[in-house]
Length: 513
Ligand code: BG6
Image (cartoon, rainbow, N blue to C red; front, top):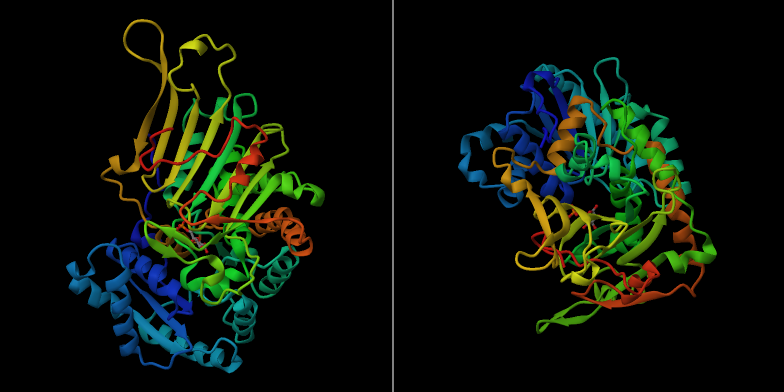
């Protein structure tokens, strides 16, 4: 296999810079961002002159912030942090903290002074990334406050903002948010993070497709029967009920992560591998999604919600019993849908997408189901149904498998399905970096390839918004309940419109059913 990652940039190609994390005391920052930055530091990928300023509403001094960050790293960093005591201490010395109340304009004036002072004292240019690790309703507020104090101007160094999904709550609000962000920042300063694009295995979909001669010729309507994309989670909403109940699986997973995966699967090959060319191709896929008519939503989309279930003698809460979820909530924790990409490559090939919480496994995979051979010579002799699939496993057990029929040794011509699987773990010398490490590093370099562009976000909202509207306004559209530890409501199989077909149950190690 060809090179799977872009070569890690040499340290000195990354300009000295400052990273400001708004919401630095929050969950995302502690669990994902700080460990990712620490890992970049351990891998010697941060520039020599780099500082991280935590900005949060808590009052604390720099030293107590360092103590808290250390605790977070001990808990959430990859590997054993205590194995690098000196490095850890050196890293902590690069951390600073400023109390900022996001809704208080003057706090940003103080933040500016703080940055100015540190920049002068430590001789760091004002190349600044502002990471919005804050609730989405604060994005435009914080952006406006940055603009107010000129913290967006680039005459003394570049400025970039990273915003987390959800980018808007609906088509209209997404457009509105974009307008507001764009009033202070150019498109090339805005990095919309979708951590699925940071996953090594999602990037590898492009490499698998475009660096090999034998996948692309069959990657189209002539040879592909249907495509399944599953992103299943074993956990429920846990402590995130408050957020999730206003979001649901469609906004939380489909509008962003799964649409991006779909776009990478279905895109045309770009002529060159750069940020604009790739994003030009992925957006075309999203713009080609066939709109689902309101009257047909039930035939194309199935929504579900998990209910209290006894799993192996242990009672799992139902969604409505989760903290901060309203007791008669109609929020979907499961969505399965059928959709079409109306273009020459994919005309009439159904794409099936599903995601859900409280399912039996945590697994994300894409299955390209190929059409059967045109003449079934061995039909009578198949031990298992002979099917051809290409399985792109995103996690766990990341890798690629091809499933096909083989002769069972011995007399006659009995055919059985087997698979050839490549496991990432076999590439021992290439460690798989966490999505946030990759994405943060890309932003530090100024590479937005793996960030969502405004037009893609808009196209995706345009597709999902009518479905959300219909759910909201038409109480007749059912919300199916499903038990925890199951693959969601059975009704999701009806999407295939063929009793012989159903969702494939993923197996842990690429084994096929
Ligand atoms: C997040 C969603 O963006 O992605 C979560 O908000 C979800 O609800 C998570 O659990 C899934 O990410 P991953 O990388 O675990 O598949």
